[in-house]
Structures are given as structure tokens and as C-alpha cells.
Length: 393
Image (cartoon, one colour):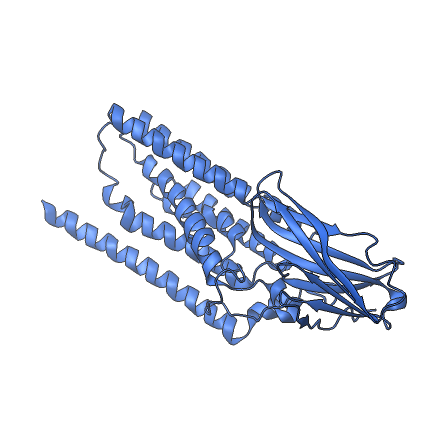
């Protein structure tokens, strides 16, 4: 009696191992191509203009996808969480609850813990807008080379993981082929569009987005074949839940919902620009070199020449924050030695922020282009080179 079941189980385990192996092989092959042909930097450079930065960063639909691109994945996660509880409580003989749980765990474990909790903080890959060739100050790391933990959170793309979450619906094909192929195909398209937005904005490389899909698919496959073992138990009828089990499931559901909501709140996009008006106007006609820094460091820098009659320093901050969070710009120190003026700014934060990056932008009147040299100072006060500042002027 047990032999056929064991044979079927072995067969399903082989399918699962084949799926995981094939996925990893494809990811490594695609990564090798990105490294060999330098595709990441080549693609990113198409959206970067020296001296002017990432011109499409705030254009639509890219900015809207940055702000709201994770919403569909969050809604899917919460809907499947409700579905898991509803089916298990109301129809214990149905196996739908395992499919709903597959999506919930893929979201929590794949997008939440693996991507945002482990890989992004510890892989240390600088974003495109943080590397020297594209207006930043860090060295480039290809996708398979870890950097310094915390010094760059490009790998993989967090927004993409929530977009690609829908591909887990492909594993619904035994229950609803229409839902599986419609939802899964939507996930492939939507996740890729979100990834395109992040590449255009200089926030992620193409390979980051590719690995986001890979992490979601690997997580869903491992859950489907080995953790939840959905193919192995599809014909079994679970016993009804007793009162204690129902209370435990309700507590687990409440905890998961709280984690999802907290995760969403802490992943709210934050973008602000700060400047200290008038701080340089009194000395701009008397200096030949302007040195600018930010206490705590910055990630990228830009010089721009405009028709504005005054010198202006802007600090662009971008990341994620709780609602109501704010930063306050002040001058930490300023001094003038001969024809050199040095000014170091300070940003004081109120509230919780994560993955916060800063860009310093100095705007100069065109009349001062040949007269004032701009030097950016890093955390240690050392000058940073600006490549090809505003060559179009």
C-alpha cells in the first residue's frame, strides 16, 4: 500500500529538485552574460546624462511605479492570508488553503526575509546612481561579487520582488489553470515593468531585477515541493480544526498581517530635496573654489549650470520611511580661506528611515562656470572627482 505513495513522493521530489536546479542554472547563466558583456553598466548608462543625472527619475510612469509599485503584491498577500484562514475554518476538506498559504509564505520569506532582510543589507552592491561612472562615488560590483555590507543595497530589487510575487500563482495550475496562467503571466509582465522603472531611475541594475524574479520563483518552488508538499497531499482531507487550533491559526494570521503591514509602513517611499537659501550668496563673487560636503557622507554628486543668478546647494534624500518622518538641513561648519570657501551641511532625522541615500547637487549660474571650481568632500574631508560635469553647456 505504501509503495505507490513512496514512488509518487520520490517522483515529486525529483521534479522539485529539477525545478530548483534549472532555475539556479538559468540565473547563473544570465548573470555570467551580464558580467561578460558588461550589460548592467551598458543598460544603466543609457538613462544617465553626465552632469545632469537620471533625467527620467521623476517622470511618469516610472515615479508612480516607485511610489505605488508594491501595492498589488501587498494586496495579493493580504487577500491570500484572508483566503487561507477562511478556507481552513469554513471548508477544512478543501486544499485551497495550502495554495493561499504558498503565496503568503513566498511573500514573507522570499520578498520580506530573504530579499529585504538579508540580501539587500548584507550583499553590499552599490546602486547604479552610486557608482563612479554614473555620478556616484563607489566602485562598481558585478552581480556575483558581494561588496561591503550596508554600502549599497542594490541586490536584489525589493520593488521587483513584490511585482514578481504573482508568478507564484503558476503553481495554482492544478486547482485553476485559468487563474494560474493569467495571474502568473501578469506577474512576469508587471514585475518586469517595475524593474524597468527602477533601472530607468538609476536605482537598480538589470541583473538585480532578474534575481528578484529568481528569488521569488525559488522560494515558491521550495515551498510547493518540499515545505508545504502540495503535490503529495492534494488528495488527502485534513481533519476539522478544534477550538485551540482555530485560535492558534487566528493568532498566526494576526501576526503575519501585522508583519506585512509593518513591513509596508517601513517601506513607504521617501523623497525630499533640501537647500539652505542664501548661504553662499554673500561670497559667490569673491571665491574661486567651492568645497561642499555632507556630515555622514553622501552617495552621489552633480554639478548643474542654470540661469538662476545665485549659487545653490541642494541635498536630495531618497529611501523609505514611516509616515510623518522628516529631516532638517543645517550648516555644520563653514569657513573661508583666501579664495576657497568650504561648507559642510548636516541632516538631522526625525523618525525611522531605511535605505536612505543622499545626492548633493550644486547649481551655478552659467556666468560662473569658468570661474568657480566645485569640489565635493567625502566623510573624511577628501575631495571627490566629478566626471564630465554638465558637458552639454
